[in-house]
Image (cartoon, rainbow over all chains, first blue to last red; front, side):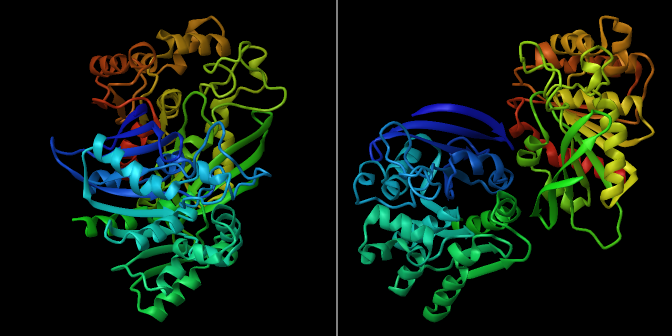
Length: 278
Length: 278
């Protein structure tokens, strides 16, 4: 693991690192904020999964999470959103919503994407092992959050690994990729046309199929340009109501899909996570 | 004035605007955060002057000022650091420390820079008039802060217009441009070789020459790569001690010159300003 940069912030350290990923078969970059802490302490870990087109850098620069992570004693890890580099297949037209920057947190089964696009294994296995080895992390206390495609990632990964995460939350998540254009393209491209294989990667379908969490927190802006066609918070609200899945789903007038929205509610999310990571 | 973007954040609005500047003779871009406020209210204005290479965007994206501006009821204005566009003279070698992105908050007297580089008049006259006309601003309550070259700008502008600003603070300012390489190049290039003309644009020289402020706040990182050669906080500390100028100058182990440092202490600065703007 190579340290690309390290900056002191709010009494802790914001680092950016690169490592050779065996799972993805390329070098991967990620960021980790370690709050101020007592020598020898082990701290809970919050995973943040980013949205389409992002790298680790977007939330690292614009997420405004460090002040609260410092106060609450949380390590904050931000992985990339796809493999990148020479030989990594991309969308044939170079579209923003598939391929590079758009891994959708699944392990692809379809060629040529199955060679490198293994983001589920990467964020649930390989990267946690690296974090455990190199940072003062208490891996018995992890939680997960994300934005948009990363909100989809956080919800589906927590629903399929509920024993792993003490809390989950999402900003403007894609809640039902099986039913929206972004998801049709991504799940079809990575997993193939058999929609049965998609259900493990669709939060609404997982809840319909019986997966349950103690609780979940979702914030959604009402001025979000992607809400009606791609995000469909209404489908999550419906399935939670139908199945009795406990959920706190909040709708905020005037907020859009940007990091200005995320930063505005980051404090609420980190407090939610910290309470459940104690 | 044209609105380029408007995003809701922390209950207020973060806008980016472009206007045709008569003073600079080109279109100029700036950002304004307006916190949530009662209809008809007039709010105090904090000016933020950025450092070398920056535009309005750096602090707007990375400054982490909105949460506190929302709490404290402060309008936050971030101008650009130089004129830009067709016909604007730049450093002959395209260096980062002169010309584009490096206006140094002076009105140039030397050709060809005197045609567009009029950043002192721009940030003290033209842009305030535009803010007064278009935003719910109480122009009787203004204050000013900045980073690096912008810290130099904030200190010198406040020292030369002390009646205008209720408070001044700086992150890692260039305190004595007459005595450091960045300043030699910039003041020489914009104002010519006569060093007498430089003293109005040198915070330490201004205090030596008798300018006084009620108080000033400076934060400086000890791991700042520019501290020893370009920033020279020690010279500000010395002149304040010699002349009796009241000053709060803090030195922070481990912090560098980046926005990670600025964001870590932005809350302290905004609280300092708010107290003096009441």
